Image 1 (spheres, rainbow, N blue to C red):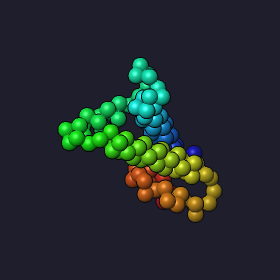
Image 2 (image 1 turned 135 degrees about the vertical axis):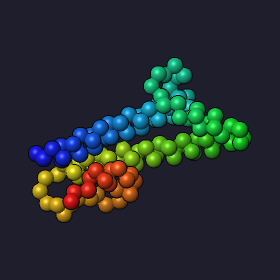
Image 3 (image 1 turned 180 degrees about the vertical axis):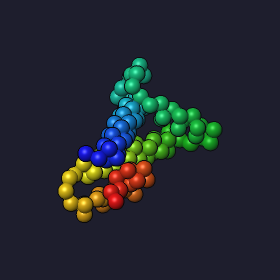
Image 4 (image 1 turned 90 degrees about the vertical axis):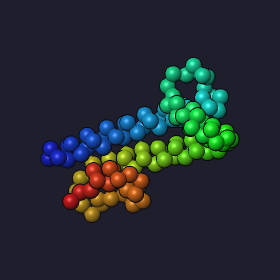
Amino acid sequence: MNHVIRLKRLLLLFWAVWLSVVLLSNLADAGKGLGILGDSWPFASGNLKAISDTTAKYGIPDLVNGMLFAGVILLGRGSSFAVLASRLDFSRQGSRSHGRVPGVHGVSAPVECLSDRR
């Protein structure tokens, strides 16, 4: 296997794992915010509190903060999906005509750069 391809695969694997951990920590933070998980739960991102603290000076209601945080979670989910889908697509051997996953590469520019096979 070409060392450049191996490096690209390792980078995609790293980002897939990293973005999955970020997504899980945001989901745990949402669980704490909804009261599903207790405040003593150690694995949470703290991003919901950061959003609430940032918007507090503007008098933004908690419902809007929750919607903003839902956007963070959806964006994280999309990024995780993009990296994982690119990793799966990139690991395919054979035809070069399947070099892209439709509708996925617009989510994250680094993913598009790493998975582009020329």
